[in-house]
Length: 188
Image (cartoon, rainbow, N blue to C red; front, side, top):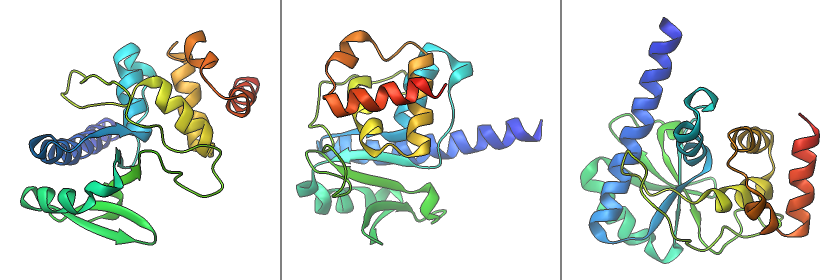
């Protein structure tokens, strides 16, 4: 019972900080989309709730040029902009733990210089039932195959097991990313 309560509290904390950040960006007309583990969670949960895994934080893709506007817009909602150890983020000053932060990646830029591809430019997206703008699965697959850490491989397995990595998505991958997807599938 305690485990379920902790899980529910963490999900509530994540969605609350995401809601405040997205509310600020929506209100200011700043383009964004939820990416990373939380986006994977929402997509997988919509298909098969039992396959969905929680993540530690909220990741948003934004345009770098919007950072100063984001900082101004989010502050009244209890989110403070910080640049720490090369990472741009909004920290929930009501809880102020970096792990409850909103981390930014920048559309059209590589997250790390050694990554194969840049974060995809903004693709058409839709709001999920919670009202969040999510990156499409095709963009998430590209991002997860680009970063290719253990947690990214796990997210890819979850997306694949939920039937979300379609042949059309796979066909849209570059050859190096298709090879990585084969590697993930072979490790099952």
